Amino acid sequence: MRGSRGVAVVLVVTVLLGLSVLPSVAQETFPSRPITIIIPYGPGGGSDQLTRGIQEPLQKVLKVPVQAVNKPGGGLAAIPDFMTAPADGYTVIQHIDDSATLYASGKVKENPGEDWIPVAIAQITFNQLYVRPDDARFPNWDAFVKYAKANPEKVTVANVGAVGSMERVAMIQIEKALGFKTTQVSFDKPAERYGALIGGHVDVLFEQPGDVRSFLDAKKMKPILTLLPERPKDFSDVPSLKDLGLDYPPLLRWRGFFVRKGTPEDRVKVLEKAFAEAWRSPEFQEFNQKQFMHLINSYRDTAGARKLIGDDVKTYREIYKELGLIK
Image (tube, rainbow, N blue to C red; front, side, top):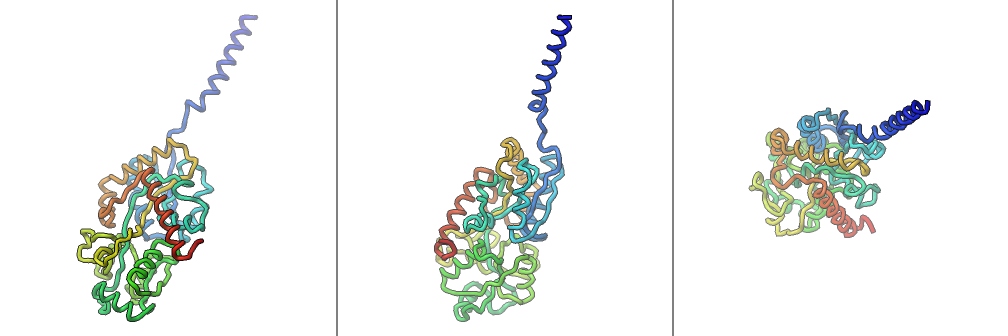
């Protein structure tokens, strides 16, 4: 009997020990189910185009479905959904430099470089000013500036709504530097901005070239200024900041992918590697070139993204103080 009891005790202890180590041995393979990317803007804009462009190559790398969900609302409406989702790597938010401006201005408490984890910045691009090709008032940039100075605040510019956004701040910078003043007309939806210019409801559009590629190809818009130090090769006939005698660093548009802080480090590494591989894929590079994203270095990994975002937050805070937008 004693022997039987001893064997039984050993068996029970063995089973219990075995059960205690099962969870650590049987770790979930990540990812094992679909990943959701939240897009904080509506269909058709640059963020939507980027996410749809990388969606298929990302699925091939991760070997699970990747679903994209639009939640428009000026970049803010999507943040609560993202922040209340589990920090498990299965919910990703695609956000832009507005996340840095919102934090720098105090409108949100989450620092995208610290309270979120950037797994990739997949696009970095520049701004341009566009007019209608048949607008005789603005055959070139010099004519535009001359007209704007002769008609203060009469020239209307289709732009985004937020006063502290990259677009609005960049427009303020160029106006202050050259001594003219336009009237900014706010549109929350990209399609409305584009239609306003083409339809003659505004005089000028402030936008990034990739977002209006189809209109450029169709000759419905033409750029008259590139907000970069030098002229990029695809726009060699369009003046840049250096041509105007300006040497300040221009504000850029970037679009990245983030997971919540607290996501297991091994899962962050899986996503960082997967986004990098998807970004390098031939199909995404073809898409990127169509968006003019190959003209400057337009990719950052986690470390590079954190540096870029940190630099942006510092820059915007300085600009906001100068403009009196924050104390």
